[in-house]
Amino acid sequence: MTLFSNLIRPSRRPLTGSRAFIALASILALTISVCAQAITISDNRGEHEFAQTPQRVIALNWSMAENLVELGVTPIGVADIKGYQEWVVRPQLADSITDVGTRSEPNLERIAALQPDVILLSSMQEGMVEKLEQVAPVLFFDSFRADHDNFDVSRQIFLQLARLFEKETTAKQKLDAMDARFGELQAQLKAHYHGNLPKVAAVRFTTPSVLRIFGDNSMAQAAMAKLGLQPALPQSANQWGITQKKVTDLGRIKDGVVIYIEPFEQADDLFSTPLWRAMPFVRGERFAAARSTWTYGGPLSVQYLAESITDALLTLTP
Image (cartoon, rainbow, N blue to C red; front, top):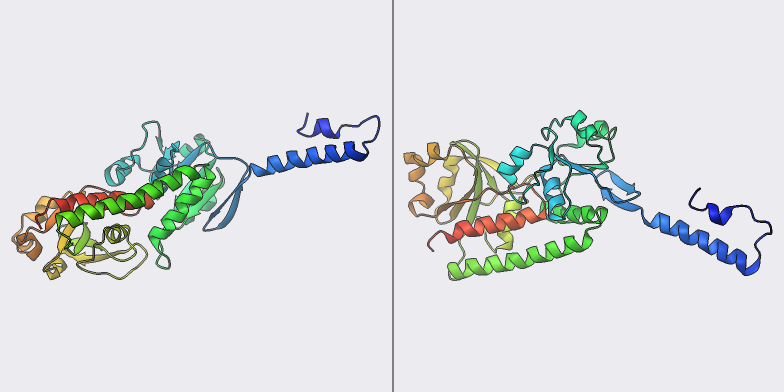
């Protein structure tokens, strides 16, 4: 028996007048009710309609996995869980989540076996869409681009996912709490530095001789801006907000602070060298480590970056 069968089955006498109107109104009400369940979501490829809230979701990008957990949604699969635990760290992933391979070459058989309702991709993964759509609907969010503000777009994506998973109230509460947290952290820094905040360079080392410095349009720079910090070695905006530099380029920083974001497995190989110890900010004890936090994540990763950078700066003597 179909949804409308009781209303449209043959009758011994035709409905007329008010009875016909009531029957028609009932049909329309049911139709509207069914249609209202559909959810429309926009990604970088256009609009997508879901008949109902997805229950089984796979995230092949760490920022997408982070967003899901922040919204209270536990994905059934995430790419490279071990790497997530080392580089992203917060928020933690549940033990029940299945590792579905690497972010660049996920295991399609494992993904298909999980029977997802939707698969989430982000920057640099657009080439996977066609294959993955043979398994389940795919949403692709090009989070990091040179022609938009990465932090602002991360908030928009977060809200789109909140709509899809019926978590819009949670999303608003999270973002409001994040904005309040920025104010708290800035107040701590101003108190510690007596209102005279230092200029800061946030970096990540790739080798003992090469590093990446976070500039405009990076999530680290967004975090520092929310803290009221100015860059000690300004860099122009690009897709990821990072610029590769030689470690010796840090010697240009005379008065500012350098914060490096962990992990850096070769730290001892660099920090024990005479060249490093001669850096002005090292001699001036204006160098500190910030605990591992993902620098290419969703909006809440900017809060975690702000907290990590603040904690590192609070270890230094003004």
